Length: 81
Image (cartoon, rainbow, N blue to C red; front, top):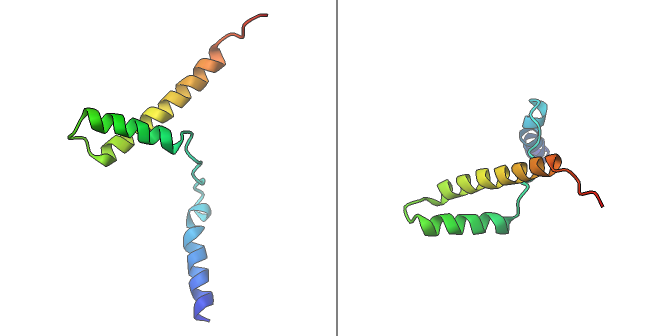
């Protein structure tokens, strides 16, 4: 009985965001290697930058660069052969 109660509570907690109408988060559009490389460069250039600040800045940069590249590809005319 105790196990069933714990499982039910766990299920409700896990699905709470779905029941509240929030969408599930999509996986990031960048690899861990890209993120690590960006963070390494930022933290090497600025020794006072924290890990969390570097992570946040790199995630924003990588999201932006992927979005910019997708927009650029969408607006680039196809070469005529």
